[in-house]
Image 1 (cartoon, rainbow, N blue to C red):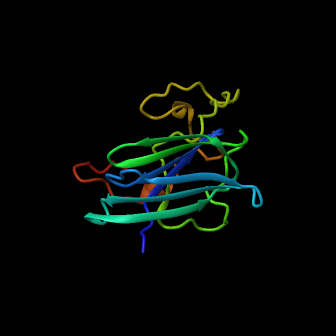
Image 2 (cartoon, rainbow, N blue to C red; image 1 turned 135 degrees about the horizontal axis):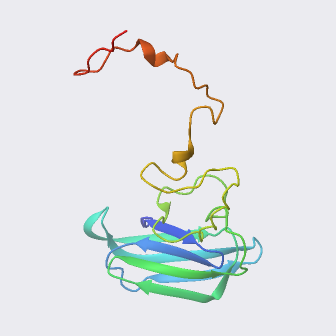
Length: 177
């Protein structure tokens, strides 16, 4: 019985990245197509390889994925290295990010993980500074912390605090009353 390969995935608005983490995978059989009835893409992977999880023995790996949306099956790139097989698939329609990789809702199989090393979303521009906030220096205390004073956010600035009953620290002289 074939094993399921470890798979990492990431996406951009127009592309999907699938990384099969297998060592020395010579000539894998990869089939990419769309299923018009379910309006989803399908990726089928089969190959013989080593895995860091199973040791030096060669095993047969197989996996079929029904993707969340359709892909452009004419724009598929495959990159093979000694450790991985990477598929770069173009989405059929550029648009919002898919909420998940697979069509089926719920938890993905345990061998399918998010590839946090790839860029997912281009960083949004920083929000404009609030006109009522103090200027930020970005120093060691963090941005804008130099403007925080007692009473700014509803705290009372009074001498009677709960800290008054604490004993002095070691080496400190008790305060004269």
